[in-house]
Amino acid sequence: MFTGLIREMATVKSLANNTLTLQATYQPEMGDSIAINGVCLSVTARSSTGFSVELSPETQSHIALDQLKGKVHIEPAMMMGDRFEGHIVQGHVDTIGTITQITNSGNSYDVFVEVEPSVMTYIVPKGSITIDGVSLTVNEIFESSFRLTIIPITMKETLFGSYRVGSKVNIETDMFARYIEHILTHKKSALDWKTVERISALY
Image 1 (cartoon, rainbow, N blue to C red):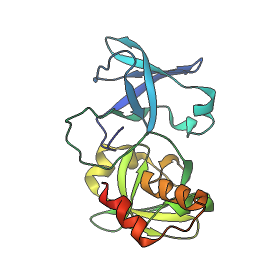
Image 2 (tube, rainbow, N blue to C red; image 1 turned 90 degrees about the horizontal axis):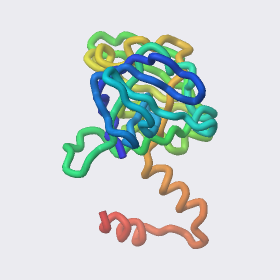
Image 3 (spheres, helix red, strand yellow; image 1 turned 180 degrees about the horizontal axis):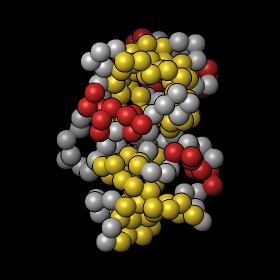
């Protein structure tokens, strides 16, 4: 599990034979889970200057593979007792989005991202979303896109500063929205408010 708070901007050294090798200050242990641009991967090799992870064909077919060059976001998996500051992130990419518009609004930037219309079911106004591993809040939704508001420090300290119109990004929607939709779709009997309140009380 991750929180969507980026630990470091690592540099891609190579991507060959399903192995992604990064130069980074952070030193994980062998087998550790680590999110690269929001994708949960396992460490398969270490060196004095960084580490490597392996990408299965399944993973490669579902992520923005072209973005694995230059700088990338990395976040180690959350440990028990760590401070929780973002939102619950699994590192499972739901879809690839496309940046369609970036507008400077003075003290922030409005970033519009287009996705497949079917994914909009899981994107909620004022809800959480993960873009390339960054925990963010959705400000506004449309038929097949949504708007984010990005503050200057996020533009400076993450890949958002390098995004342009047409950039592809990994998107993980809110886990709870996915679970609720799955329950409602597969539940034989109707879900009533009494049941919702009972489930909520468990948490």
